[in-house]
Image (cartoon, rainbow, N blue to C red; front, side, top):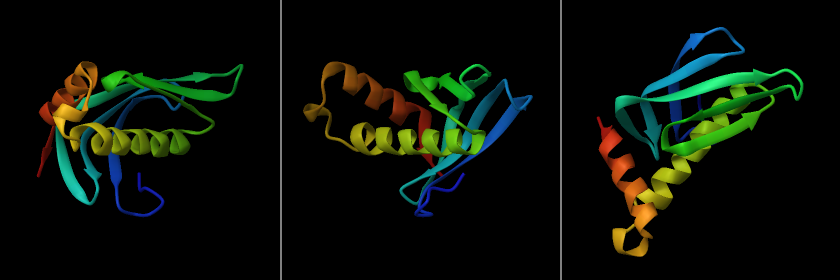
Length: 113
């Protein structure tokens, strides 16, 4: 799903119906650089009919809610981009121990192609 500035994108594979599904990201683009996820990033999506929201949770302890699936994908991409810039690209010595663990996980899962 393209970022509004066109610089980054995710290409999800969706399993399940439109309300309850798994999103699997095998490839994504962050900062104009394509990455391959190994293993693929996985997120579970459910639809909360009472609140009329799609809820997502999955890898890197990401949890999100949005009014539509396209909005949910845009928000997911925004969060992944933020994590990449703020953690994966940051100097390890500037990060807390938990943030360094997240950095290590990001760098271990995403490889430039």
